[in-house]
Image (cartoon, helix red, strand yellow):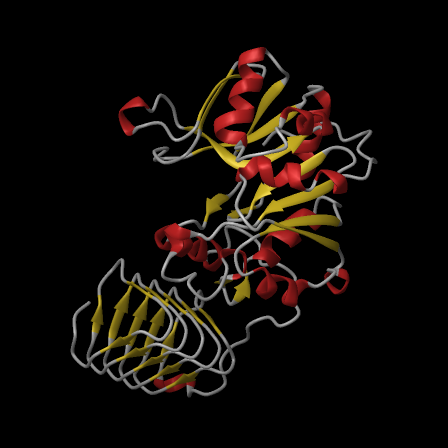
Length: 357
């Protein structure tokens, strides 16, 4: 991303995170845990977003919650011990992305950075805010180029960044470009006046297209930084690889994962990229490559784990083979079982001995 002058950014800017969705595409992983706190590299995902926001010197954060809200508020509370101030709004019935912001209208005073609650990125929000101010925009949409834009909102912009068309998730045969809505917006408070107070309202389907049509100052800020959503198991796995490979930063976190101590180095093969909690038990002959293992996992003799994520408390029996899989909490994978690429298991799943899944 290009850098823009940052003078005049001293106003108190708040961040608003859309964290209320059920994460249906990420099932079965989110049946017992809301998407904003699924473990990514053994850290609740929301810590990555909070750390990202703090790097832009934004310390007031509003979370819009709906699905299993208590599990989120129990972790973060008022946010003070993480260096931020956290406030919460709660929707009994989802009102859409714009409706959620409207419901928090009394907490919003000025320019607000809005983020989808499933975005992992290192985009410098200070540059986005400077771009927004320089263009005197009412709304700025962060965009990214992706290899496969199907399933995303498409944004077409003039050379100066002015948005000329916004199309939310068109059919595959109507995809006209590779530049997508990255799920991060900078909005002036005037945008709230455009959102009806009742019913479901979407920025992507309702508000932004209407603003573009009437000629409002809506701009696209194209980023070339790291960007990945975690909205499906495959994308969640890709985000895990992004962390393992160092393409994006780990957040400051009070209980960072550490190398396991329940194994003998000369008897196992664990590559330098893998992330394992210190309470894992690893038996002889185990090979672990490019993977993440959560707290209390137990891996028996001769098992192979490659390009996979295994949540806490799961036991992998002897000579099992797991590749490009995501396994939930407290699962049991039988002796000699094979989990093929793309396998996703929810919490407490069992795979029988010598099964192929």
